[in-house]
Length: 110
Image (cartoon, rainbow, N blue to C red; front, side, top):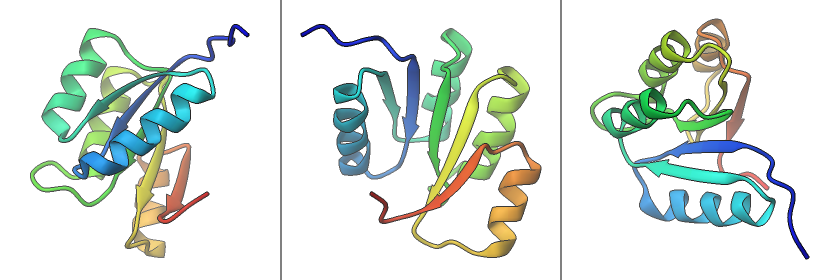
């Protein structure tokens, strides 16, 4: 059975295992998925071919997810960005939404 192409998703997480799991799940749902383990690599992918959506971990070494969110929105304002974190706070959620996040979810999630 042929699956409908749903669009492209960029997954950015410093944990390779999380990138692998999300890539597999989203690919099974018909999305084309790219992964990056840091902000620099993520932004290179966004410049090359802006994704329809991005899923960003907030806590990462170097450039954190909030900074990546701001940079993605500068480069590709139409990209829907979902922030992910295991350390959710109301302050961080508000900051993410003010910077243009589409959604804010806490790990673990279904």
